[in-house]
Amino acid sequence: MAKASSAFVCQSCGAVHGKWNGKCDDCGSWNTLVEEVQSAPGGLSAPKSTKARGGSSLEFTALGSESEEPPRLQTGLPELDRVLGGGAAPASALLIGGDPGIGKSTLLLQAAASMASAGINVVYVSGEEAIAQIQGRAKRLKVDASPVKLATETDLRTILKGLKTEQPEVAIIDSVQTLWSDSLDAAPGSVGQVRACAQELTRYAKRTGCITILVGHVTKDGQIAGPRVMEHMVDGVFYFEGERGHQFRILRGVKNRFGPTDEIGVFEMSEAGLHAAKDPSALFLGDKSDDIAGRAVFAAMEGSRPVLAEVQALAGPNALGSPRRSVVGWDNARLAMLLAVFETRCGLVFGARDVYMSVAGGYRMSEPAGDLAAAAALASSALDIALPASNVFFGEIALSGGIRTVGRMDARLKEAARLGFSRAYTPVGAPNNIDGLEVIELSSLQDLITALQKEG
Image 1 (tube, rainbow, N blue to C red):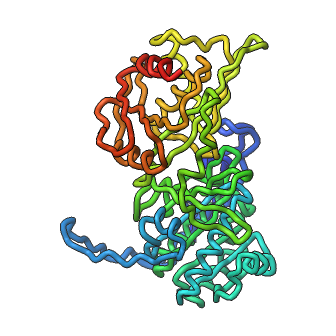
Image 2: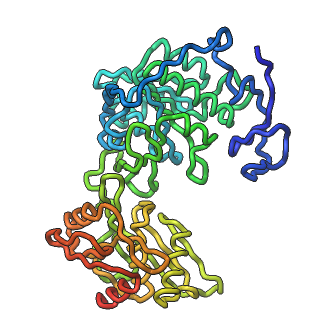
Image 3: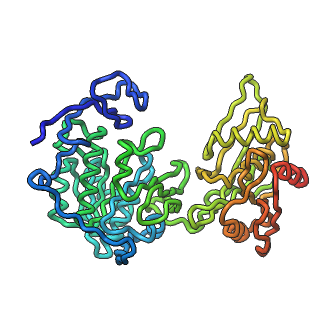
């Protein structure tokens, strides 16, 4: 048996140190090094089969050989199936994270109830709630008649033994940060424990073919808590996002070995649980009034789905000497770049103004195609020109002030026309054969300002 050794592991980033320091050399965090006993590299004991004998022979397969793709398992929630790539793949390990109270447990309980009602053997193991609490939520969601098998446990060895006995097709573990393994002398939630438990559960999924869904906590920065190696172990990583003050939630895939990584699922939260949003674009759009400056509508693409969202900007006077920049739903660095392009290429100065920008409805604008909508909202506020509510914008702005083309312009324009928009400001080369939609092509940021002045 290998002799157990100890190391000091950073509880913030997972870096391993040979001795204790007050500060982690990798992430710079203070007082985060904790001594952990490690019986093998990575904190896990080597499999017994490899201790007693050598590894089995390795079989190779030709790259061009055809193998049948296993059938997907439908969860009963169309938006969840969309993000997963058409359903959950057998033997997959999935990690779902999100802010506390955002609805992760509600989403998975609804999916578990739907699958169990369809005859699928589903188990739900909670390390955070009592069985009575889960049953109470199920009654509120009106899914308490579903044959989902519940358990509450945090000991990994006990959970794996129960799964081996029950042999479920789907296992939901809520959450991985509450689990602990007796192979490590560390507290639940520590980097070593999270890594060890995630690896054992992923190994179980691959060995048995069971779809294993892990719930993960997130840090204050919105990242899943624990070592980043956990995200490399699993087959899919998904974030459940949304603002508590709004009724909608977004399930976004950031890693998916069995499907696309840029799809989103949009849900509406109600007293009866989560439901698929019938018209996602309507959730991110405000009222269509023409008398307020600083508003522009952005035609975005989320995977194969076009979504329209409203960008709001306010360029106000500064009374404190140091201008303030505040952004919600967009990148701070991209705003700074856009302001610099405005001042350098167009002569529109924001240096003495406070600038506030927000994407309505809690939507997060991540693609460069949102530059033109953000620029339109900023220019509208700075020039005090209210834009017609029937206008829509998309395009990427370069440092030279030029407007670059973006992908899927036809889908963006068709969605805008479907929702009743009559004019679109686009990069050069956009299709102009969409019924009921006037397309105005812009080649530079100065062209946008000229067009807005004509609007006013």
